[in-house]
Image (tube, rainbow, N blue to C red; front, side, top):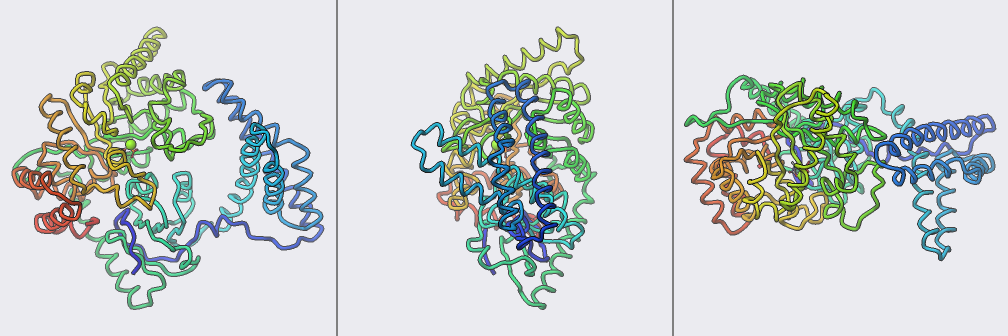
Length: 582
Ligand code: PEP
Ligand code: MG
């Protein structure tokens, strides 16, 4: 068995499907005269769709972000219609009989070697624009091809070097039973998506692409982080049996949907859901969550090719509010940057994107852009009980600035007499160690706190959550993680301010057990984990959890913490141990 990092629990037994092979263009070989005309027409059509895509992008970006950002796309529009490029591609198709993507690849190679010889740095940098335009045309051509090829297939295990959030559209088009990747940590955004969809996933599998080909039988054990390739019929049928048992147990647990999450000594724990869209919100209801503790709004932006308008945003937020349990939603403002980029903000490539220009750090450069979102949230808020949550704050000054922006948005709505939510609780996400250390000052300014343990751990450990080489350091079992969480929770309890944990740790009984002992009573997780966590809550007592917490904060090593917690959960909640990654 190949061992990797367990990302999302569950068992999948299905045929491998390599994303790179699917997206790789099938060479059509040398084409006949008729095919050549068809291929040229296909190239022209793709250019026309890309032109439309860019036009929409330009008009929205110039209106909502500014002329500077739009200028980038205007120059792409000009490059797209450059007769030099079109002629080069068409000539390649005609003379060498290759397909359009191959002709585009060759044109790209030619430009790359030409630009490499240019000494003027400004001109050399224009190569990035040419590459972007050519990639847009190639993507347009190959996405259409692969969508056609994949329609109506049997369940598959996606195999990739890395799974990017932008590839999530695959989930809509394909029956994905599992995901295995060479790269990616357990708190990366792709991992979160897999978990929220209940798709078993394992990452950190070095050399995977050398061993697996499309069509191979693959077993994914997302609880243990194990993968078997072409295992043989006996092993395959044993895993199919395990898979049935896993699904049965989960179904039985779902039946606890209408029961309260109350510990066996009577303490109520609020189980909330992390959602990206309406489908997740409905899943949160189905799983028996009490509300939504984290609505990641950036997916509203990532799913648009240009800035969504205020009214489009109101509609998207309203739909999530109305679909959520008790219409109660904590709406997190835009958290772009890091590994989540939208083309229309014109962000430049950064050496350290996770430490760079991300989240609320973008708000001073694009105040109108953020203002639009705040107005949309306040407008949508009349349809339920909402709170506003701001990610990635580092200083108390930022918190004060953000409060001012909310106030401006509120006043602008008042002036217009536009209907909007009143008295919306204001909270910030504690994800930066500096904010965790200065929690007392921040608590003076906010109504509530959420802890984003995914980011907090990556910054605490100085280890990129999406980099497989350091994924082992992004480790919730590090004693430092429990110590810092203990100090945040204790400060909030003392000041009587609500605190919710909403990183991936919240959905993992193993980690949650000591946190309940520290006084945490609100957690927000992928809807998929609510039943398992509820089972765990209902079997433990707070004094027992307190004893566990006391031990953990005094431990010295990751292994010591993990072994201790794993043994405790296996003993205290045996059903839970069968379902989750331990
Ligand atoms: C986190 O960092 O823990 C969090 C909840 O936010 P995200 O995973 O979206 O960065
Ligand atoms: Mg975060």
